Length: 159
Image 1: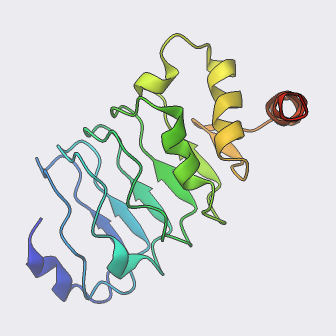
Image 2: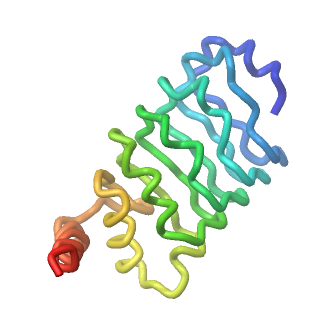
């Protein structure tokens, strides 16, 4: 990524997928950016998104080398996070997304957190960490999944 991007003041969608990008630069000046697509690169860390924190609604980061969800907590307008096929190994990483009030659509398939789980088990675990989502891995959340996620956690919390 190169600082000349900051001259794109009216840009709402920026697609930089498949460019061998290894780090994110500050996006100063891109005050209207709503969709940032950085899939299929070599990014290891989500960072330097402060300048677009108020406007960014969708972040597409699938097929990178990300192992932490740090750097997202101030993206209060984020509705969509596609971060499949990365290196997220700890379920506690998803807790960092629970404070994002508008987050509704997430994609985590292909991360190590799903290893040794069925699709159904993984979806319920995602809900336990990010209760506000309505769509997981391309499928709408079903009422019985919410019951399984929160019925189980309520029982264990009362013990």
